Length: 303
Image 1 (cartoon, rainbow, N blue to C red):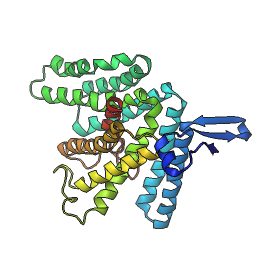
Image 2: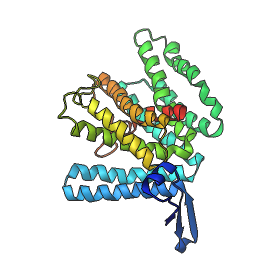
Image 3: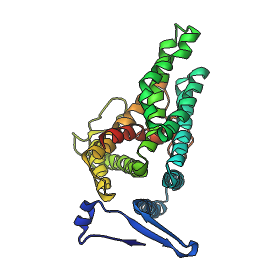
Image 4: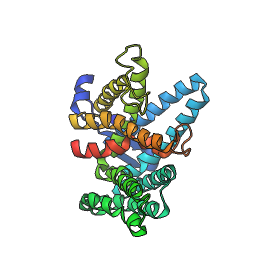
């Protein structure tokens, strides 16, 4: 593997140049571009984390590391291949997230089916007709149709509100994996790193009273110290990846923390601890991508 690196680490960090070349003589294949660098960073982080996990002897950490070892190629390869496969990835993620949400909030079948439809329609629109994403406000109103047609006076407003909210929060937000296609893996990687940095900040700074202050009663573990960690960690990762900008920094750091709190609101309202048990060590898929659901649209707007 070769890389063109300006003299000096600081110059290289600030240059934003991350095009690497990987030659595979056995397959007579040459891969080049920023995606090679991102794949190398992801694999390096995974291997270093694996060494630490093995040394810790923790079964829980081993489960989490194994899940990450599956997630990275499962997300990275479709994005690497192209927009079409990224749209398929976004649709699959949205379908599972809708499934978990519908079970949590006990959405009736008509609303659940409508959300399944939008979970596929939004990513496809982002791929084939991006302009159709501007119809999101209209489709929020369409989400009230099942309750209206059923004449549900007792529970109709809750049904309509939850369905409209989920159509934007899950289906529309995940379609921005396609909108941001060239930067999609970078944003997802940075958001995950900011999550880890938030945990480190919350843990490492807790000896200070200001750092222990919760951001919201919804989640006492989400503290000011965690927010500081997310901001510093998010900016550091974006700098390493060659994409540090004010817009992306705000999206990754603040969007990630707010995304966690938003899902906490949904779970607290529903009286559940986790959205599901689909991902060993993490709970449900929704628990894993909650940060991304705000980071993606913010990155598309601010980046």
